[in-house]
Length: 347
Ligand code: DAH
Image (cartoon, rainbow, N blue to C red; front, side, top):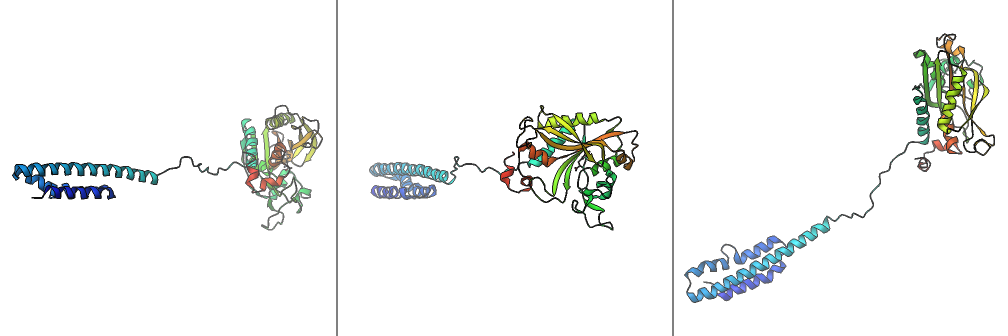
């Protein structure tokens, strides 16, 4: 039978080692060294039954004291370990909610695209449909069918990008205007026609503030019975007001285009100075906006329409020009500059 003081010494030893336990598993093992199955305290408790009264009293007290002390100390150590383990885990999983988020880079539409869409929308709201055509075009569609004679200056090598294709050196080209789509559309459709054609066009212009070899136009074509110059004026005045503001006035000046007769240039009074003269309108009070006219009978004949049965008007407006004017941009080149600082100014 183990002596009470040996039990107490074992208990003291375990109490001394418990603070050094690094995990709850180590605490369990230390506790079991005294109180587990077959351990001295357990064995002593079992032996009490057969012991003398005097031994039972002394040993029983030691068993109870050691059991209580070790159980309490082990529990204490477990609790502090659990607290430390939790603190460790919290430190490890720490999340700094005050860090600024990462803002994803978002693109914006290019100003030209925005103006393109806006102009198209104005005409779509009037009932026009949208058509497109090829940028590599034949001289037939770009010039001949549009009543432009072979000697017309716009057909010069110095003005037009010709493409080396086939036997005729001037047979295929980069379209110089969106007007050829008028012809293509009329070939494929019967009146009534109300169509707009936004698109890219090309000319052999040297780059300067207002010229780039590629730019954008919106063509318009209305063909129906008894269309008059009055319809043209009403439609284009509506467009000028929708784009530049409801107070705008327009004027039409005689001009020449091969595919319209009569032809006109439409001006809008300056939105910046209300027509009194400023830098935007170069002191004239007016801004030249677009070309237009009544469709020439020769164009109808070219597409197989009867010029005595239908009439129509057409117009062509520079999309880049509209954007330059409205936003006061000094250089057409900025539209083709990949610098996002320019794009960011027009969100
Ligand atoms: N195509 C002409 C140009 O590029 C613009 C134009 C003028 C288009 C009169 C038309 C029109 O449809 O009727 O300068």
